[in-house]
Length: 588
Image 1 (tube, rainbow, N blue to C red):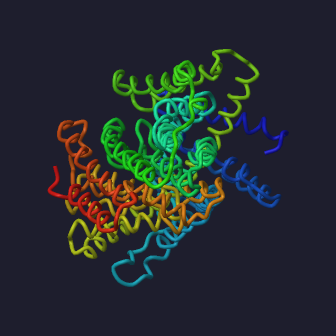
Image 2 (cartoon, one colour):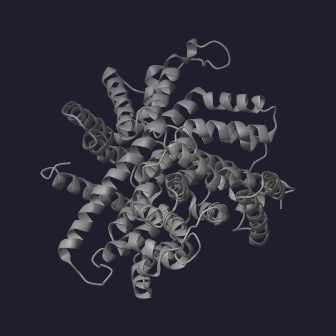
Image 3 (cartoon, one colour):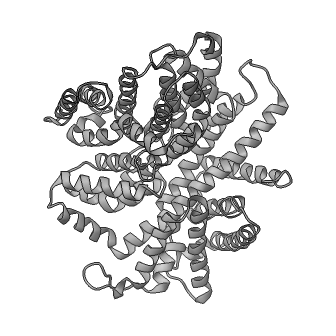
């Protein structure tokens, strides 16, 4: 982005913010209007902004213009298209539909790489030619006009419920996160973490855990979390003599937990609202205890590492003073309080509550930590918010639009039902083998696609099987969502580990091994949610949920110490076995 094009991108980001805010307050807007406009606003960011060469820029401009024409045509004709019931009429409509699908594939490819658009392209080929596949995995054949039409001019496929979540909910929370990140909230997270944990043994690592949990809750991205909080916490840890592999592992593991940390969590949580039919508040409450247990395991792991190494706390002179903590914490506490009040006290929808919190956060962009106003600085902050919000909304929109192709094909061809049957038969009709197969599928898919996409695709094919085998829908969805996060710290592809290892110049395999030991909760807690079903029932059965949480906490503590603490091998094996027995003994 050059200085000459920067004003254009700022303006485009501002238009995107204004459009998504307007949707919240405008009442009912037809889906074939709001969702194509959402894609149209994402097109320049996904196809031009990310261009690295002249050829990519020129092709991006051409594709953007074609995409804008196609989206504009759907918006202009949304009423008459409803009468076609997803059936294309004429070659011109077929060409337009094909162009839309190809452009979505290219948007996703430029935004996140080849894997997800490759899966979507294979799904499209299956829909077109699957009738030639022998056996139960073939299908009867779909007319091209019907197949492409359902995906592009009806409220399914590109404009289905997943895209609706991106338009109406995810975008607002992404903008909210960009507003908080644009001001002093990030420093507030660091100051609260430093004051709460800095003086403890291993305090610098614990500051990373607390700050990453807070920051990750609004960023929803492990990689973004590592890059932002890690820029502060990693130098602090290495300066105090922490082993580089441990410092990087702490940051990678703590940052990965942001997507499962209420109140915001990641984009996948909002998709879960649509797929389960559960209110967001219910999902958030259900996720609280598992998230706390995850960070407890990290905390315990740091204590265990402190038995191996001298892990000093943050020096007094580097810890924030009380005044700084109180003032900077207000920059995130005020918007968070408004958000939680809106959802729990005011009874508003999550997106409306987020709008109110967002407006409060925007007002706080005028102030700095000294409570002074600098209009030039504030102007720069608002410009950064527009850039970051526009880019992030477009990236998530590109992912969800591409994933919507896969979901649309699964529904059109019945492939989802067939895979579900295969999963049930492959597991012998038993729940735990099916869970392990699902976890493996999440890990493999999550290696190359973002958490949200991995969760959506896995839960679409495995979720019905798990539910049929006895799980509650929310239980099944949370299980898949957690395992979709595995690839952030699990080799061979572990994005958070790669970034953290690069920042401290350490071998990534050493970092990954340490991260897997520290992040053992990411592997065990979702299994514990199955063995102790009341763990996610904090809202409806708080007493038994807390008892289940304490039981799992004891087991996780034993396992963490067994894996990490410098004990004789037989003691370590015994502690791991004891911890597993406590967690998976007859559920509470």
